[in-house]
Image (cartoon, rainbow, N blue to C red; front, side, top):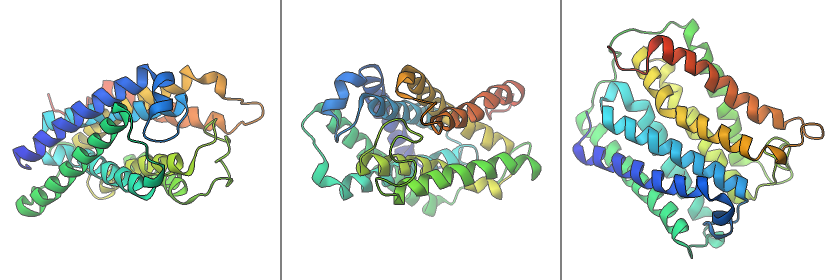
Length: 269
């Protein structure tokens, strides 16, 4: 497995993302006006949901810390941190670091990127095996993985390349108009999610994909709750695309509950 330094940095990510996420999640109306860039309360709560999800993912991954079980969760976390820090750099002229919440977001990303750098160096130095340990999945069972990568990857690429005014950017799916800064941040989030599960196209480990699903489940849960909290923002009659926002999260999250009940979360009894 990777070094203790890498593990400690992953725990540090869990702590920083946890504090940041809870703060943004429970006080979105107060945090939105003082965040690192211009966001609405719903956007602030949604970003808080990402951070709580990242905190859980980082914690359970550092706690289990077995490469062939947790490596895809680390890949997601590393890509997310690097990608979001690049977005901050590209939009640095719009960055406002005048409130502790903004500095905490920046510190969480810096720690995340440090964890990524140390982790990649450790991997190149140690070369841990990601060979499946235990049961494997069939090619047919990979179908949902392929659908997830294609759909979420498309959303990520669209968020990274679309311009304001393009299809879906004016409240067509997400109920509020995003700035280009926010759109790129959302794009990095979705693209990171898609890239994180690509290794399952050639790795057949059931335990690994169960761990990844359990580690990422908090992302689905808290983002979905935020959408229900701000349900009045959605106008399904005039903008039916908003239904897709709910359907995607529910279509992934609900089946996972039954999968966990049947197969567990990646650790063998």
